[in-house]
Image (cartoon, rainbow, N blue to C red; front, side):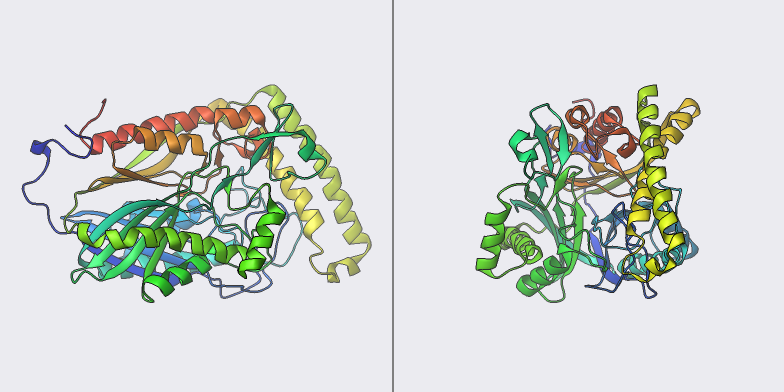
Length: 502
């Protein structure tokens, strides 16, 4: 039995045709200012640099179904997913709400969609500590869930017989952002003098793969692309404006080259420690961008479109009208990160220091109310408050794990002909992603991270190095859970291929 084939007895004699539907909606908040997610300091939206989108692709074959939904958000909060599915359940002609797979592009310039206190481990979901005048998260959730439900329903209603084809190329976008010093200590991003004198190596691997699924109508016209790329969309992640980041330019460039009516659905593959930012040779790279006359975001868009352009011309000859579709949804119990008394003590000490800083900042504001008339007056106080809350989450989880040491996470596993899709809710470190691809029975494996609210799920070597993203405050789940999830993913895919245990 080949890896690409089910046993003959397991395949129907004739597979039904594949029905495909697409839709796109705007999820930019109409009412502002809103809190922008993705950084420790609070950020109030000061305008819209470019619109935020959600794109849906519905696939159905003989009753089996999946709807992929990509959103220009930092993550998919439990609240947003639940509210959207509740709206879908109210309809009578839509898809099974549990067969809808939501994922985020991880833009750091999208509205907050996590309720305060509901997302321990996130840098920006713990409230602000001071009244900064933002619109409520609940208000945005009501709007966004309505838009997402409408997008799913439109894609589902518009499904029609078509075909799909897939391919693989490279686009140099995601880079490992963790550098290691002479003492083996890892740090995110800050490779500047004098720290650069102690630099020794980059911590982990980089993945430049670009997995592409193209869909076509009955006449062979290209209708949409699922572009699976191992890099979050946060080239300009510190802005105070709402933005889809580089996927805004990428969508425009792909449509310019391949069709103005094209639907574009981004997926972030395993990329927990990857970024589009270069750690070194920054000045040389900036010079080349100036010489070429392009922005960083447009450069990324060009690289994505170049990769897609190398794939598409070869797909029309291999369009499949009835590839086998199988979709299973699992709930996997993953162990919480094991926390020691030293972990809790260190976190409490850090939280106490930040509490003092926060109280000092609040005292300044109370003593001089005029400060609140200055632009972004709230940044110092909110940065201290959120970091304090982040550390306090360690103690809270230490108590929780005494009675509830596991947390169930929703994951999706799909087979579409010779390719696989596998989701996870985390910023899943690349070591696990590469491991899954190596062990997968599929010809190509599309991993979908941030199909939930996260956060980081680090590798053993990153935990050894420490630093943001790989310390207890960052990790509700640790490497033990990462390996369990990798093994479960491989086993589920092998079952879909009829080769479990091989």
